Length: 554
Image (cartoon, rainbow, N blue to C red; front, side):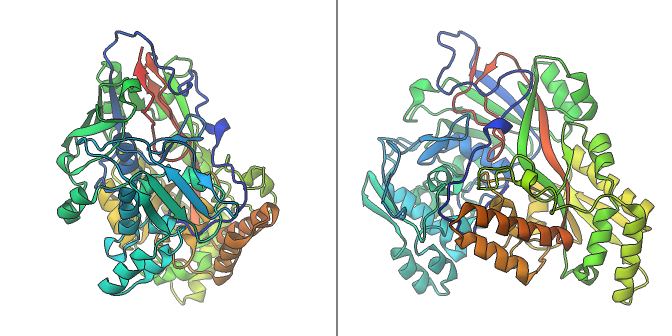
């Protein structure tokens, strides 16, 4: 998951994918706040999750594993409800927006950190400044740069210049309870983005003394959300308990949440079926076995899975024909049917189905005729590889290393892909499954040949997928460069007319697909076994994997 976004334009975007939220056998997204009344059931929830969270640092977090925990122990000015609509969180009410759409004035409610000290407007100002500070090395700093002066902080070179630019940032604490944010230009979905975790406040007196250790252990995490992190047994489990200092603690039902780090889904399902977990993802045969059961819940996601080719480390990958060959040689339908087998579908482009085009339509539907990802074709792929190698004066590709997570599904995915390359192209490749945190670190440092990556939408618009492949975007791990692509994305960023902007984005995606800048594999859906007595657990189509703010046990 991730965001680092270039500034978007003043047009009405549908941030939410209401049709995409939960379409399983039971309704896991009931109206927030309904609760269970006088339920006497133990309000404890046990969840299986496949990855250890990297550091729980509001500025530095960029992985879903971190988002999940931070969203539970913390809160922003707003929190998205079951329909993806912003509801007041630490803000007392909705923002007052100036006529030009640039200035947001927000009044904070009486809220406290989990240590009992008040949350103030300056906690937000400090958080924004810290994220934008180039020495923090926050990958998501780009999204905070929507605020006026944010880009100037990011580009500052010396400590003195950084501090001077921070004072000019368009985020000002007018008093302890009043925050004023001025944008560089109107962003129609800015209120929704204020619910995104990088807009959470940070307590300077807690964060600053910790330095690089901030968020590394349970005692190094502080939030103002519905729960507190009390235990973190790394690579094994995390324990959260109800935060009695939360502003709406009276309506938080769960008393305790245990998150088990379980990379093997068979082990996860065993925990579920023996009563040691209440939510566990299903894979393959498990999904088939749960068809028709009340436990089965489907999470439709705005998430894609794709390959990135490191063009600087492997010069052959700078050749579009070589990239296209490696992409076209993969039988995507066979992949989702045999490896994934959970309702996910083969990719037909980069932007997943269900994503709005920002103009009232579904992006994938309106681009279906023109933006066609090259289908699986082993013979054509082999010819493309030969043509590409000829242009490079190479007889064959060197051995390729395919990097990915060490989860069960990821390891099977890596093996399927390299076997497709061997069988259809005669390419020698080996897999490198490593822990999720290390895979993210190596991706960030461009230490890979090819990496199997995943991206979940930060908001419901094509830009959340497309701008990450700008030539200067830090999330462009493969370092693919296309000037025309850059120009189209930047032009779309400034385009006010929704229809014109949608076309620019469609044109940009077509270039990415034609050039095989990345190789999309599939659009993800995720089936879960969810205990039927768990009420109001939301499985959003984007953002955190689960939302537990309104959850209770019946």
